[in-house]
Image (cartoon, rainbow, N blue to C red; front, side, top):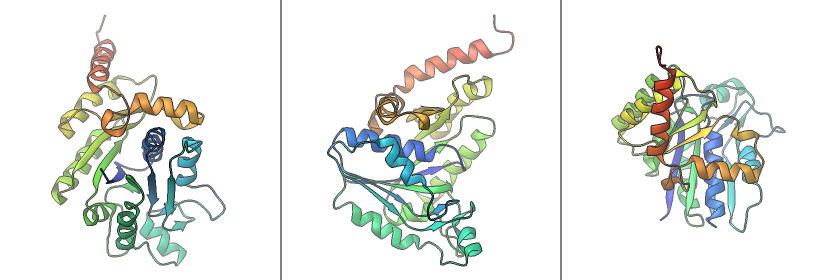
Length: 254
């Protein structure tokens, strides 16, 4: 089935690129042609590697499948796409044109991922166009990547509420980077994430996954993403482990 999925986050630095790369690695292992579209790369000069270069590095050899990487625009300042274009005195990203391009890529790819910048409602132009508008225009579901720590519940709830208000379908909620020594806050939040999204978690990527070689990254992706995203992650098993960790971490636990 041909699919366009927008990978958005609850904010900046939550692990969108790592999750995007993980989905790519699993698709390539299955021999699936996949395209990744980055409408706007900010905070990188013309000679610096951006998020798409990171995706290619983590995926390694293409294993016989096609990986197409498309960058819409690049701005050197680490700002929102609209602000970065304004400061650089360059035209803003045309999200309508990007949506058309993503739709056209479906002709040669079974999966098209569109990785946003920052959160769902970050502005791409002075009229206020967002990645949510792109998702609506090309009929894409939205995969939300969130941080597991303090403050994440509010950011996740606001993102999901904004999606529901716009009629956007949730492709799943993924924890982008879970520390190995996740404490009480993270353990407590994990159960609340499933309550907010009204479904099991679609995956949990471990912190440090981006430092792995391509082979180890593919193995980690398989264990960290749910079957709907190409992996074998079992939300029920993870939930039970999180509950046990929460019980051990709670004050007064023996």
